Length: 148
Image 1: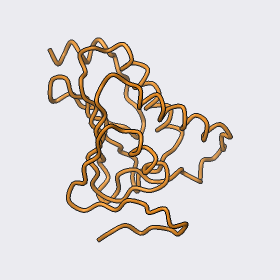
Image 2 (image 1 turned 180 degrees about the vertical axis):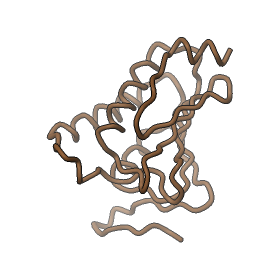
Image 3 (image 1 turned 90 degrees about the vertical axis):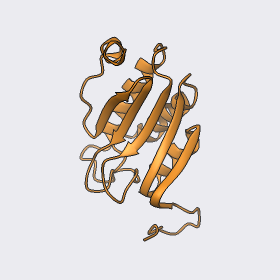
C-alpha cells in the first residue's frame, strides 16, 4: 500500500525538503535546509511540485510538515538569493493558497522558531501543533527572537 502511493506520485528528491511515507496515507514533508531553514526558491519550487502531484492523489490523506533543523521550523525569505527573483512574493502567495485548497489535511508539527514565510505557511495549514519549544513571530514590527 505505501509502495504504490510512492510510485504513483513519483516524487523526485527536492533540495531542502525530505519526504517520508512511513505511515500509510501520511506524507511527511520535512524542511531540511540548515542552518535555519530559510524560505528560498528551492522551497517554493519543491512545495509547488508536491502540491500539484497531491491534487490528483487519493491515497494520501494527511500531509505533515516538520523540520529536520534543530531549533527552527521555517524561517523568513533567504535574502541572499544570488539572482533575486521578483516573482517570489507572488509565487509564495499562490503556493500557500494552493496548499490551502488541497483535499488532504495539512498539519504542522512546529518545533523551534518560525518567522516570516514560515509564519505565513502556518496560517494556511489546517492544523498547527507546538512540539516542545517553539517561538512564533509576533506581529509587533520588531525582530522576534523566539523562546528558549
